[in-house]
Length: 384
Image 1 (cartoon, rainbow, N blue to C red):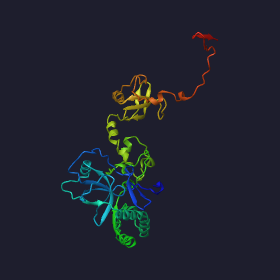
Image 2: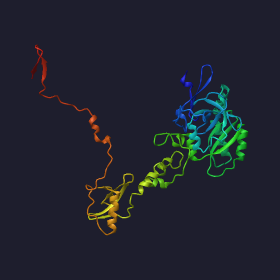
Image 3: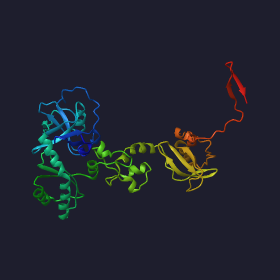
Image 4: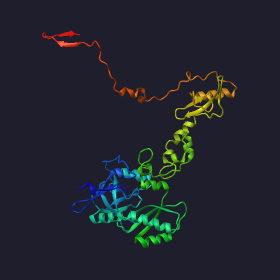
């Protein structure tokens, strides 16, 4: 098999290749699966979820289906499933008892919910028609953007997804205000000869659909596992003493990064133990000005020079509280000697040794090196 004929489709988590006989093969790629779920209950039998399977379509669109085909299905199989009109084609990404946890997270009651059906494993004709529909998506998206621009609509079409049978397409769009796209739908139907569904998404959802690599070097959280987007404010960034630079705080969606909220609660709790210093500390040596605060360690750094980071010394938050109480009584602290205020510091093992130890050093040979010469008697004679 020629590897040059393999086409990787990360939007659906698979690769396509055509054999020398002309047969089209689809291989599931777990590494490209957006919003993937680790099956930590794999191999555990569960009768209630025996015929339930999670099927993934394009990007982050997933749904659970009931297997009514009577066929034995497994993760990675290409299946033909029930759709609102016609049928769709997707890839099974999850099976087993872990589906119950996914349904519970989405507030779905397995006893009352009416699941759509899995008709069968996709046949060759289903796969061929599915790939033909996928090939139209990019051209359709470009053309739909041109039509929307000609109508002067304040919207952005971010992605287009065709149904597996090619009779319907979902247009994902972003708009800051309400858009009247009745005329747009008529033009789309006349242009593409398919059924049209317009689905509005947010900027964060668009980033999850497209995917990418964040500044941390990892895949975007919205594409990897996040599906619930909470509001993010600059107050969460202030509580962590982050720079309020919009270019550093904004993600690829041009909104505040979702990861700002990850540690915000920890910093808010830590700030409760940090005293608020309104004025410099009064000591017999002069005024001690607050320079910076290590919130998580509970350490505050002071300097006798105002607006300067020279000669800083650390004080614990408890010690600062004591000094503030004494200052309110009119008592000046006798001494804030850094030698007396010992604060536990984290030391990395990387800095314990010098990197120069890896350099090769020339060693001179000793002048009085003794050479051993084997004697005929089996011993050694020492010679200079």
